[in-house]
Length: 67
Image 1 (cartoon, rainbow, N blue to C red):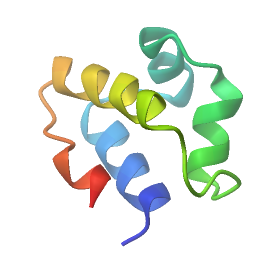
Image 2 (image 1 turned 45 degrees about the horizontal axis):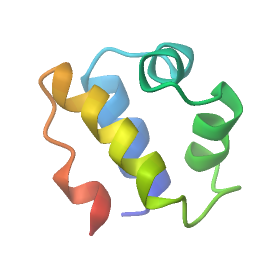
Image 3 (image 1 turned 60 degrees about the vertical axis):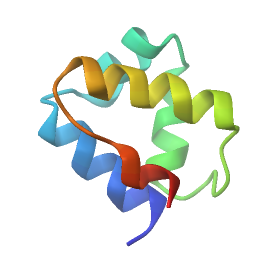
Image 4 (image 1 turned 30 degrees about the vertical axis):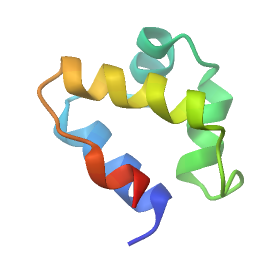
C-alpha cells in the first residue's frame, strides 16, 4: 500500500476532507493533494508528523504512514 493510499484511507476514517486536514495541520491544501495524488512521494518528516497529529486527534492511529 502506498503512502498516498494510506493517507487517503486514514483521512477518510477520521472524517476529514483534504481541506480540513490541511487547515488543522497548518499545511497547504495543495501539499495534502499532492501527497494523496503521488506528486510528492517522500514528504518531509515534519509534514508527516503534523498530519499524524491531526489524525490522532480524530481517533485514528496513523502509525503505518511511516512504514
